[in-house]
Length: 105
Image (cartoon, rainbow, N blue to C red; front, side, top):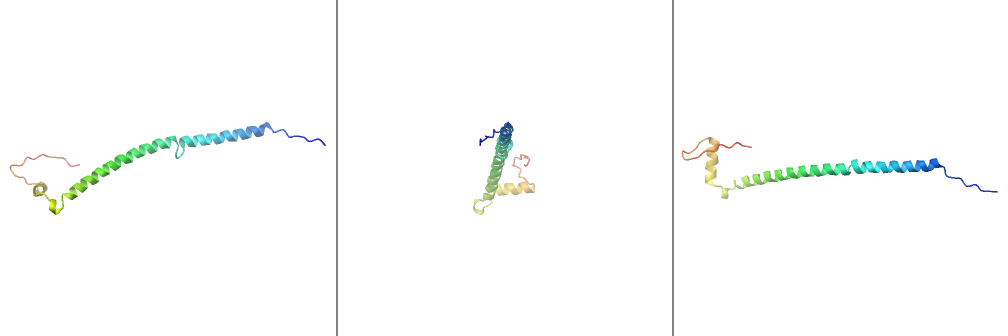
């Protein structure tokens, strides 16, 4: 009894090739546009730069607050600065004072 070998169909080979090409397209799409893709990396770098700038601004603000707080310690309190600040808040001045108007932030 003779045995027949079944010849693989061309449609089966084309189907496998098309499926693999579609999978490669899927991977390429996510390599460019996915959560960790090329475009997302650019956005993450921009966000990092923005957050670093915010961090530097906040650190400067904290440093100013620490400096102002250290001036309020009783043993470091400068009487000249205290009288200058009090006269400024009350709107009084000495005849010898030179007044410079500064706009507040």
